[in-house]
View 1 (cartoon, rainbow, N blue to C red):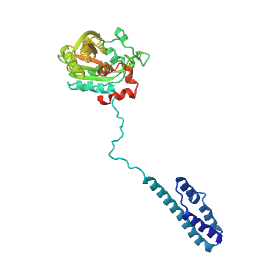
View 2 (tube, helix red, strand yellow):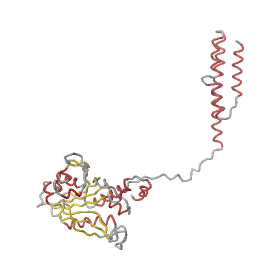
View 3 (spheres, helix red, strand yellow):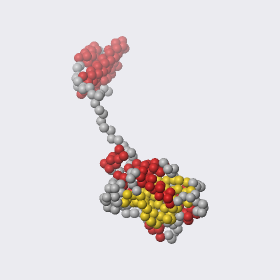
View 4 (cartoon, rainbow, N blue to C red):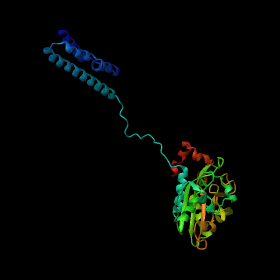
Length: 343
């Protein structure tokens, strides 16, 4: 019986005398005296062998032993942590911080927002429509009946066997939706993604973006269209830019024209951007065909209007002199980070 007391007291002295100095030694101390298989657990188990009159005294000794082990462990842990910080270098709080990479809008989004902002200054508002369209809004209402040869100009992604549903090939379908639902005057731009079944190259893709515009009112003339295009070109490319109109054909406008601007890179001296012609094409336009107005239940004798359309990729490539359209959809951070300061 006395041997048990002597053993417990010896362990207590051993705990008091312990002086581990490393994390490993302190962990061994914890396992030996406070772990699930520690010496203290064995000593506590010996209490059942003692007579009842000695159990209270032995229990008090064991509690003191356990408290001593826990206190010693806490003391060792705290002292080791403090010693690690004694010689720790205080950081220079006046030093500049590390550079944090900045995000940016996609170049197509930058140019799209700029185009919308330019047209909004002269009264155009934004309207959007679905990317999955029916034949009426994508073709027929735009003066493109089923047998019209101009349909072959747009290789379409059809979504049904009867070819009545498709991914829209242009945002002109939104023009029809606006004219069907409203009465003039109306002045809108239609930004959005469009789809055509084309071979992907540096100059073409199966998905791209457009901004189209529409102005319908009484007494709208081709002169209004020319002034609108000149205003846009000078706001986008610079005040010294001039425009020219080349006769063209679009089924939903008559007369129709392609719009060119003087090369803002070489000032018409000739360069790769303008193919040494001094002129750069930016889009198409024309007066809304009377048949399109009639399809939308608008009186062509009372109302007239113009429409225009430009590829956002085209304008972005010209603005930033990007020579490969595919770069816009590859999500290469090395390419995109060049536009951080372009917003």
